[in-house]
Image (cartoon, rainbow, N blue to C red; front, top):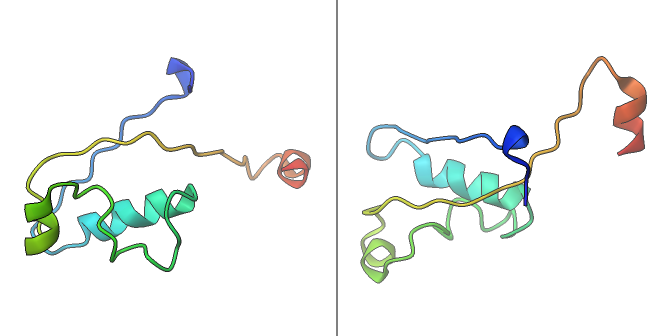
Length: 81
């Protein structure tokens, strides 16, 4: 688990057909949960059969992802990763 001090809550809000699901899929792919090739087409967070069938998001979903911040000022730290 991530410590509370390192936890951030991110909400994706946009108009219909403006790429919310595609953005979510790409964030999930960046963590290796789905392949980058499938990002934007797999609709990973649309878990209801009706959402998959109609291609629309009907319910909210939440997921925990990891992100490692690389400080651009600390070049040695970036080389170690």
